Length: 633
Image 1 (cartoon, one colour):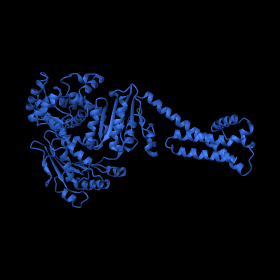
Image 2 (image 1 turned 180 degrees about the vertical axis):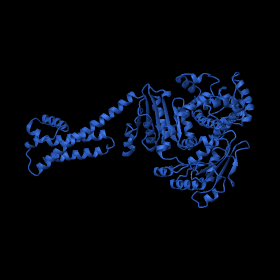
Image 3 (image 1 turned 135 degrees about the vertical axis):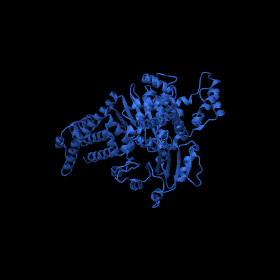
Image 4 (image 1 turned 120 degrees about the vertical axis):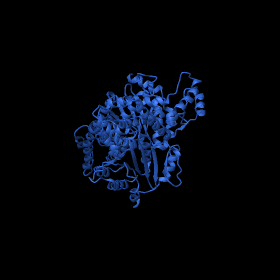
């Protein structure tokens, strides 16, 4: 009897040990323990059947059947009465069997509940047409999932690689009624469903590798269709070259949407304050810090604040500002084109309406705020140091310096990048200070992914096509998508350029509405304002300056006529710009566009006699379609 007892203990030890490796998967965990109880009961009860059944095979089969059925039955120890056991071993033996009798049904119930939950989750996939798939469970994916779940609970959420997450993260994922998969299981695409994939690993290089793998997986599937799947992958600006390569390899087959987190955060901050910043005036912009968010804020300020009648000065304050200035100059020499050897202050060129100033000060230096007080009073301040405590103290000190007598800081606004939830809560209650940093706010689907801006970006691209497709806005959605695909909207270059143009359109609208005086309906006022050719020309020049600045900040350069001719020859006249070399002939001042058009037309005439470049009119076309782009009735 001792042999059976020890064997049962070994089975229990092995089963519990293996079950602990599966503790994050309730279904597998409870199933393993259920079978463990069954086998242990079978071993402990085997002597009884051996006594009652002379045939060894029949004894084994009867025992296994008894063991499997016992885990779902009430406690019964009648078989123990027939075993030749003596005290105290009898009591120990019987107690172990009783414990297994009680544990078996418990684990079996856990398995049934978990199995039923998995079936229900799978059934939810059958009836749902919108599915969000996250490659990893982390703070960012959970925050995005939470905002989706709160907005629309009918959408299906799926998390992969759950075995890499901790228990609390998995519990949170399950609270959104999500389907949680332990491995990076490749989701099979079903017909008539729409999918959004989020490659959101903490390691940005891993994101690109996994995105490549996902693209390969998708395009091989039978029911895959480009217009029903979006792949969003999270990267840093330093990875843009790899982004271009990824787009070059898969852009024609997969709708890729990269997310630069720092840039997305900067844009959201500027969107929240566009009514103030779009007003025509001189503005002093302070950026405290020099990290990724600070640099993204500077880039976006340069092209988003270009409004008629406006000029502004951007001040960046940081202890390592010289390194940052050199880095930004290297990536965009035609924008940051002044020497940085001694004095960090310059204009881009004579026509530019902004100045850039780099100040080598550290906000933790006691003399920092004294020096800051000597600079012109700011209109808006962005505090985005890497350290939360430094940000916190800086924001409070800046408010003290610039607060009005009523203790309400209406202007300037201070946008503070804080990661700590408690500090966000404390500082966020302070008038005049916006906190932007905690995951719940920062990774909200509607503000971070901004689906409404994505729709506006598509309509912005359509504005450039109105000449060829006059009724494009009236066409059905499927027809529009086909035209967008054929005209290269889904490429990395056009997609992001259109996205930026749509954001700038919000600023244009805020600028026009700032001129309204009266109770006239917004859409009527904007429509009437744009019908004035003089107004349209002024705004078109501003739009060209914005596009010019954006393109140069993306690394584009002006293609001279010789280069444009070579590009046309290599493409048999299909284009005069080169997306891989980042060359475009229209990257000139607005006053030089007409002469550029004439030169380009002479190149195109050789291949397409009827084709004409219309760079000046394109800037006006996008503005004429403003109400349709922003969907204003």
